[in-house]
Image (tube, rainbow, N blue to C red; front, side):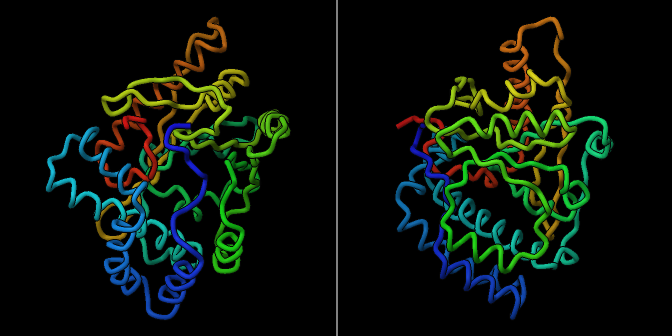
Length: 298
């Protein structure tokens, strides 16, 4: 995979414990303040991630030299803030935030019990901050993910985030096809299957397509699943706005020609996804959190 994405969150166990302590004992605002002090460390001592952000800023966003230096800080800070928000909301502090739903009529699709759906997000914004919303559908939600997170970090988050929705994780990092059968079982039983459409594991088939004006590789898997099972396809992103406000963006993919073959339908869904994602990232470029050479430019 381009940039050799490892499937792990930045930061160690001490950092997580420290910020969890701050959030619970001193408040979210104090956690944000300390984040300002922590960000320079990662800018300086996470060279591969910093390089990827620099490439994104200079060669994709086309920012100038000094604006790119500022963007490094903004991007890291935005990511750290999203982690703080995820922990705070999961710890029962969702009342400290405001939530807005865009195209909320699409939620009717998710509430139906007689149909499954494929939900495709990205490592952009913070979908997990939508935990209070997903709790309404948690028993039907299946999250397909490459699970390579540090066990200690997972334990820390599990012990401190009580508001995590009751979804089922379908891991794809095993050397078998078990996840394929679980995905099929879930959709055939009218459940919701959620993918992140902007990352893939090494042996997965990909399609190269322009994204933000530069060719990039996207996985075929989520879109092939959607084309095979002929269920509604929804693109979902949670973006942070000013004043501790999160906007949940839902876009329903247009149904393609049912007479087309599966591959053509999948490619049509992928093009729609990339178009929607490109629009949203263009509005909130600092909330793009792929800290590896996504475009494989260097």
